[in-house]
Image 1 (cartoon, rainbow, N blue to C red):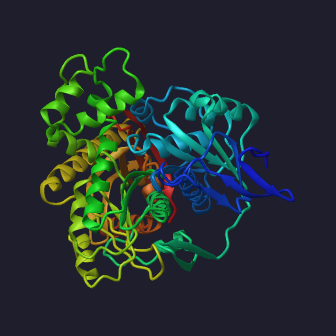
Image 2: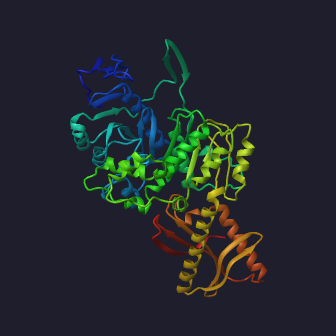
Image 3: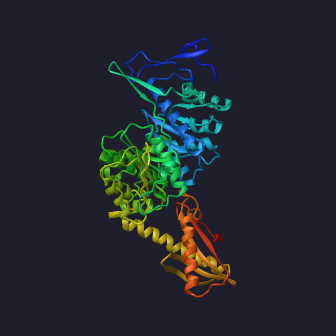
Length: 538
């Protein structure tokens, strides 16, 4: 651990026992300090009371993301609640463009913080960031470009520390924490002269919370399960009531500290829709006035996506930052874009007392929901998810677990989402048939159905019968197309193939199950059409 500041920090026998703070929660609260500050060192800058609260919350969240997923984690905290949280993953071109991140190589820990902060750029303005790993130069350069107040991590490379010490004219707050430090089991808090005590919240967020699926739909892809864990870990460090939305291993909408759960859901969904729409081509092509900075561009994008809600003065201020008047996105265009994202998740820190949160989430394209259950209306909430064939619900009797609901959109968005997915599926099957024919397959039948299920294409490859499952997807939020074929799905494909052979009196022919993976990026560009032979073993 690096040495602290002797003018601010008080040590006793080599142990740091006190760090003086600039002031308390408010500037008029002049006396403020950290007592028994052993695991912390302030390497640069002067902390305030709220900085420390944010830093400790952000560090716990980033550390627990790594524990839950095995992947480097990062958090962006603002006023004692997470504005964003994420695990390390490569950044898409669209995400980079929406976040104004240069096209440069980023280390894994840098991608984690870019995704965490990018979950809600507005709320992350002036944040305290955290990472589960040492800060390297890649992450330090990323931090230095942002409007950030502080960062906390278990360590800093020398070149990274040099970069951060130059940030904010040398005043950037840099905090180091001992990664092996564990707090006492008992927590205390003084309120109005009274001391409250409780055991610390040690609930572990693991995949065990996702086992008890009680709905008709049982399948939850690994990628969606991982996103549920990330969003639920983030909820653990919010002020209740809280609901969070996640996608592809990051939080994209946090509705925290509301008195009504449906208001949490509405807030989280509104934020998530903004995050999704930030990557729409029309948003990425907004004609910003020359010289407008990154913060100004962020504000313009936020206003543009609230077009119909803006007062005239707000709209005039936004348009003054643009060269020309852009055409706002229509409701139909917004809905169509959101349907392209597969694997959106929602998690809640307490049960849903009514089905209204599920109904609101469906409009944002949420497919999986995690909540503790135990409401008097659990059956109604589960029934709301079972009303559509894509829904799944689960309960578990431990903290911060366990309703998983896979929802498809209903009411106004139902037709939009269904038709969009049908178009994707139909186009995928057409491209698959063309690919197979080009490779010498003879197509025998399309969309064969029996009591066991359906087979997209039945063909012959020489003397071998090929039963072909087509998987078409936009984006990789839930993995590659072929990874979506779960063990139960594989068993059903085998049953369908055996049914066809029995029905056609073909007991002794050679046969196999192939998969054709058809994949587009989120902007609709075709990435690949790949035939994977003998993909399912019988």
